[in-house]
Length: 294
Image (cartoon, rainbow, N blue to C red; front, side, top):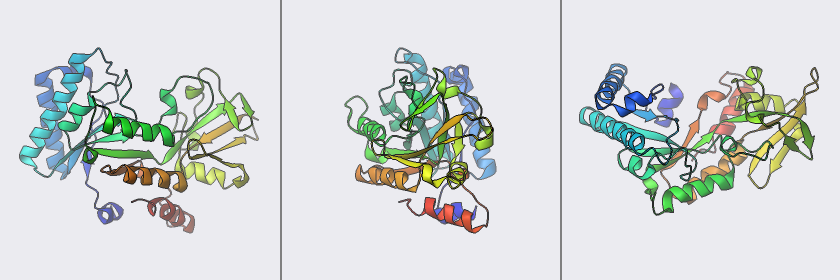
């Protein structure tokens, strides 16, 4: 709480899963908005962040328009009671996805800003079956450029925030060939790595860093994606893993990218993924991650 107050970060609510039936029904939307407003008022919150990540294909015009209506109705209701409240919307890292065609221009018009989720980028790319960066610099840059300059999307700089990851992905390799981690066809969903901090193939920055410190010589830098990674072999199972993540250096490059492209700012998913103990190591980790923030 002290950290949030120091950084002047607003307290917002991020609703749970919003089902399609609610989005499509005007009466259900109104009830949903009323419930969110009550939660905000009861808990002295400052705004709401939409993190709907269901697919909306290009052909699903009615669903897309209904989702935009939901955001608009929420924004109007909140601003009428809490004029300084904030409504933001999470969006995929590229405006060119036919599966997540949310109507980005209109969403930006009816909200305070869009939060570009510049992570899980490898998950959105099918093949080749090789582990790749979680947040590729060039893919991120191309995404921002598309949001800004594509004539159909064309969103104002002040309506875009670049969301960046303080976590990584861990992959089980069939084979490691010159630092390339070859995956089976289901590589993205291969195994459950709860011991590394977050289930699935996610790994917190804290867990990745602590593991790397036991084998610092394994650190590698991908000059193309401008991200770090490292590989290792489990001594018990002999299985080979690769961790693709972001560190202070790679994040600093993308903070600078956001500044150079003159967008509203940057955001993090999520600050929880650090060591918040009072140990010297925890303090050093937090300083190394927070200090580069613009």
